[in-house]
Image (cartoon, rainbow, N blue to C red; front, top):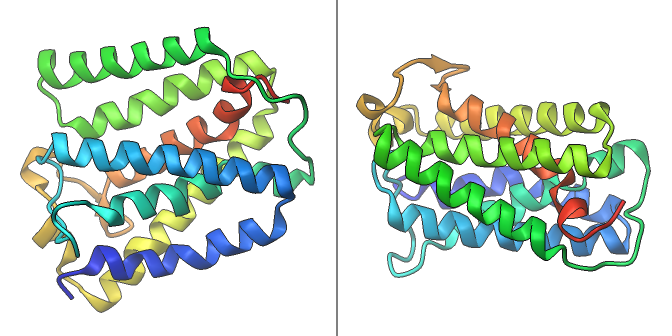
Length: 217
C-alpha cells in the first residue's frame, strides 16, 4: 500500500465526476481551469517543501498525484455552490490583471513570512493564502456567505472521508508518511489537525476566486 496517495485519489474521483455531470458547460470549464491551476501549484510546492509529509509517488520525476489531487478536489470545490444553489456562472470572461498580481503578491509574501521569517511549516502558508484570497474574492464579487459555508463543509467532509477510507486499508499511513514532529501534533478525526485547517481554508479560497479573477458573477 506504499502508493496510498495514488489509490486514495479513487475515493475523491466519484465526487468529482458527480460535480462534473451536475454542472453546466461554463461550470465544467471553471472546474478544468481552476483544477489545473490548483494541480500545478500543488506539484510545484511539493517539490519546494518536503517537511510536511512524504508520500511515495508512482513517478518521481513528476508528482502526478499532486496534480490530480488539485484537478479533482480543487476543481470540484469551485462548483459546489453553483450546484447547490442551481446558479450558473454569468458574465463575459476577462482576466483581471491587477487582482491577479495582488494574489501572486499575497502568495509570495505569505510564504516568505511564514516559512522564512516565522520558520513555520509550509502547510500553514498553504492554509493562509487561499483564506486571504478567498476573503478578498468574496468581497469583490459581493458573495453569499451560504455559498462559502457549503463549499467549506463539503471540502471538510470529503477530506475526512478521503483519509479515513485510506486509513481503513492502511492503518499506519499517518504516522508513516507525515512528519508529525514538524506539526502541531494533534489528530482530529484520525488525521493531523492541519488536514482539517487546509480544506477549510481551501474551501474559502475556491468558492469565488475564479469569478473574481475573471470578472464573472
